[in-house]
Length: 230
Image 1 (spheres, helix red, strand yellow):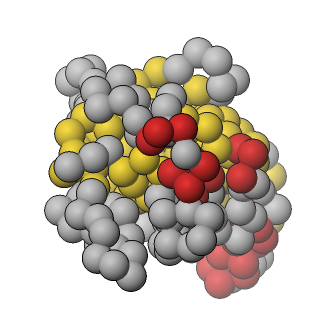
Image 2 (cartoon, helix red, strand yellow):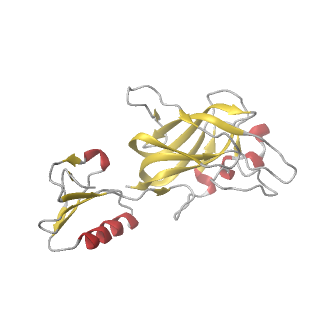
Image 3 (cartoon, helix red, strand yellow):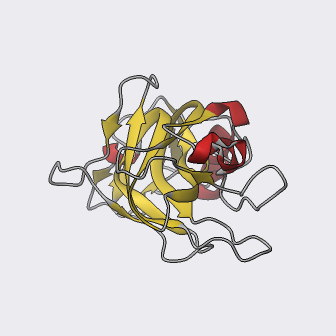
């Protein structure tokens, strides 16, 4: 984006094109980095930085450009988590076919799973948790309802939820809005539409919890987490 620059940088590479700088920045992202890069069109210098999007400095010099990382699915993307990395506060009738590990985005019903996680207790204290494959910058959440099975069951989805995160999977913080209040995100209005919500500010997390607040018929969902590895 024009008129922006990185706050600090770890190395600079002179005499490269913007396309080459984008390529070097993308390579860092594939290697697990989640940091922005900067580029000066005048000096044709690429700046590799440990900054993230919260550290961007606005400038009137439109020859300075910031290259931002491309977010990806951290649960079931190119480096998916294992089933063992899911957990939940409760599971409907303690049945394995409602287990948290079945809650990956776009999951479908199978002989062993309804294709979603279903909570047993119907209150606003339930959650599904995933431990990511490493500390990550989390920027958003994508949710779906329960997929309809062959006999037409069941119209169940989460209509609003909160997000909690932790760097050690023990102490959790709730994502707040810009006024410092716990933020409630809009969920689904049907079974299959993916509803993506971006956090007001990216957070560093190893574990993320989705805490359903309201739902249609039962608290059932599929989900993924948007972000990139640190």
